[in-house]
Image (cartoon, rainbow, N blue to C red; front, side, top):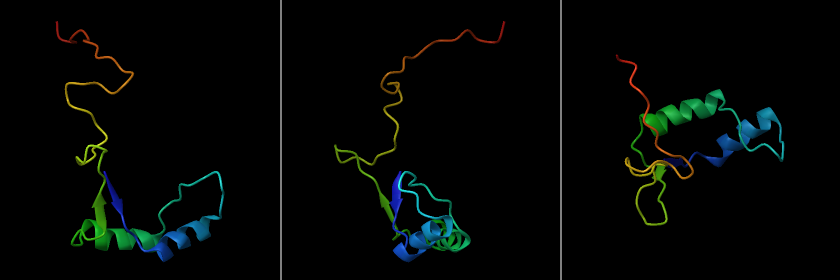
Length: 83
């Protein structure tokens, strides 16, 4: 996971086009921001992308170790569909 440092003016324009709702913090990407993301985040030099770090200082992926299920979930073995 990473944070993309887009220009504040582009983000404000997305919010302005959709109206402000203090309960909603998710806004659709408009055409100007979409083009900026393609040019700078996907095809650019990566200078606008900041990888997120977990508290241990490792790059955060949002996933735990492969052998450990997420907290609160338990691994289950299912019967194979093959006979």
